[in-house]
View 1 (cartoon, rainbow, N blue to C red):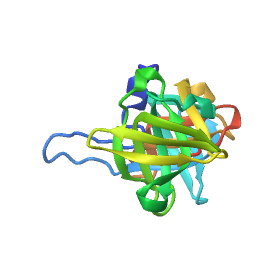
View 2: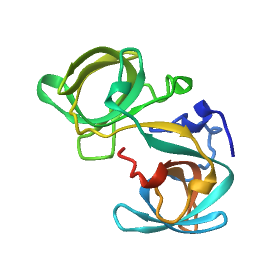
View 3: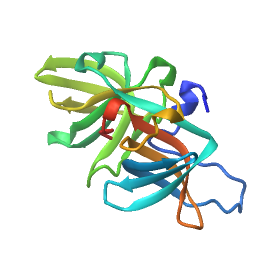
Length: 202
């Protein structure tokens, strides 16, 4: 359960499964919530919407910790992701920013709709110009385009570090990627867990 950093976050925010033609693939699941119980390789998760879901940990389930980062870590040349809402004149206003470690550069690169809030988007790319004022205004460049993003001072800024399943305890806040099973449970492929009680902002 200790894959490389790039493997841990490959498809962090936009998973793409490749299967043989005609293969039956279980429906994908992305859950945000709080672990309310753990029994060895079984978790009980209460989602942000109040639903209780049973989760199965697999032998190759990857676990990554979400940790606090500073506004200063958003610098020219860094690779980031940001969930954002539409701003004026085609710009974006960040809801959160996650700064990828260098080993994860390129993860999920691009701009796409996101399900954090109605009309929210996710943009992963390289920071170009940075204007430091009250917060940051920056360009995020990705293959095929770029976006201008305003980062207000109160915006949550986080990064990632390797973790183990020992962090998956009752009370931990997680984002879970997996597949729905016939019995209603979810088999976990990747879990992002807030370290030291952090609630993942994305």
